[in-house]
Length: 193
Image (tube, rainbow, N blue to C red; front, side, top):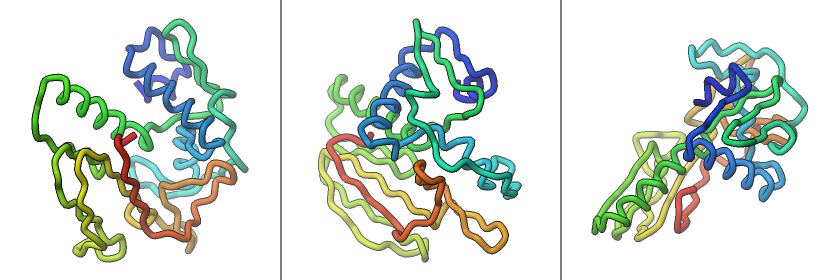
């Protein structure tokens, strides 16, 4: 769905899940004053992050607009401004985990643990080990969670170097900067999203 929207700039007759994740993205974009922005997809590519791992920089914007300016939904059709691409990497896995959690609760499953590449929900007491971003064979900490979602991200793991400058997948949409002073960030909540 995302690749169709990015290439054609319109996705007609979207299903309820795709519409829901787009609307949630717009909601979080507004709530975070543009810090959460799924329009980072094209910017990551411009900074050299490509599926084929051809890490070459092609230029970048000064900042990203709010999603309400470039992404619209009308009658189950989704419209994307021709100058932008979206990337659901910051919301897709957590959206799926929360959907699975609701489904498992609905069917009465008593104990379950969902892990979608580090976006986790467990409904029973479980230690979660936070990986050390510098030495991935070690852990920073063990955190006990129960009926909680937990997610960790790091600019160290998904990173690349171009012209002696390190870039990574976490972008500040207000200035398209990838420099961060933190090596890892973990969030614990009632939901994963």
